Length: 97
Image 1: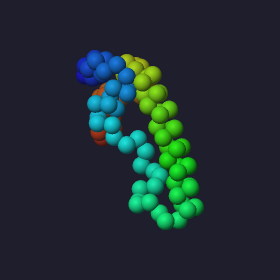
Image 2 (image 1 turned 60 degrees about the horizontal axis):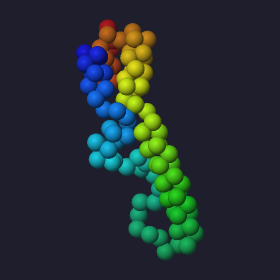
Image 3 (image 1 turned 120 degrees about the vertical axis):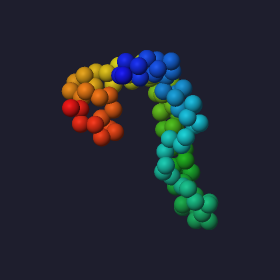
Image 4 (image 1 turned 90 degrees about the vertical axis):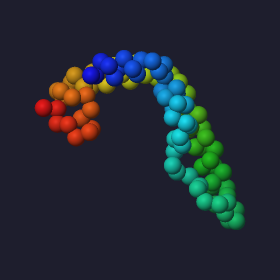
């Protein structure tokens, strides 16, 4: 089972491809969300937040492009083997016994 999951993951070259395939969901759920404020201080702060979040998003997407799904699969396999679990998806309530 674990090998089949890993084999299917190998068809996708990097995390950016996964992100693209997911429809470009928002990476961050922080920052100004409401209509523009009439407050000049809030506008100035929001502009800085927007610029900082845009920079962080660009850096994160660059990392996504550099991380292959194969690397993630290998990390998963290593963690799975070290965990002692006997089922590959313990986050679904399995105890590994």
